[in-house]
Length: 202
Ligand code: 5GP
Image (cartoon, rainbow, N blue to C red):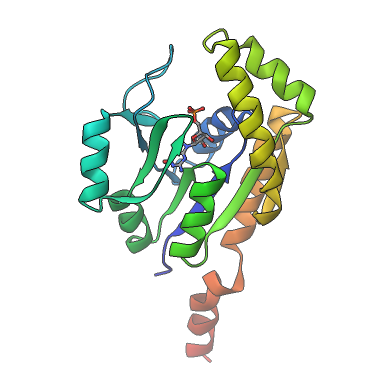
C-alpha cells in the first residue's frame, strides 16, 4: 500500500479556501480533512469540530508541551496548530488528507514530511481580496487591516508552492484543485505496484 499523502492548502484569509475545501471534500469523500486546534474566538456560523477545535490557551500550551502538534503558529495573537495523530494515521493508512495552514505552517510541514503536495489559493486581485474581507461583517477595521497585511506577506510566499489555483470563478477553482489531487494519484511513484503486478505475471 502507498503511504498517505498530505495535501497542504494555503491562501490569504478571504481567498475562498474554506469554500473550495468544502466543495472538494464533498466531491472526493475519500479525502480526509485535518481539523486544527485554535485559540481564536469562534466566529458566527462556525461549528466546533467542523474545521477547528476551539480550545483555551492553557489547553493549547499543554498540547505543545506534550508534543501533540505536528506544527503550530501564532497568527494575529492566536495559536493555530495541526494535531499530529490524524496526520500520522492518514500516512499510515495510505489516505489523502487536506491540511489548511498558513504559509509558515506549510513551510514547517514540508520540512517535516516528504512528498507533500502544496496548493496556494490566490485571490484574483488585491482589490477583490479587500472587498471580500470588508464584506464579512464579523471583523473590525483593525482586524481587516491586519489580515490585508498578512495576505500580502502570504502571497509573497506563493512561489514555494507546487501549484497555484486562482479563485476568480469558484467552480473552476474547485475543478483545478481536484485536477491536482487526481494528477498526483497517477504519479509513477504511486503506481509502482501496478508495474510490479503486471511484471509478476509475465
Ligand atoms: P482564520 O482565523 O481566518 O480561520 O485563519 C487564519 C489563518 O490561520 C489562515 O491562514 C489559516 O490557513 C491558518 N491556519 C488554520 N489552521 C492552521 C493550523 O493548524 N496551523 C497553522 N500554522 N495555520 C493555520
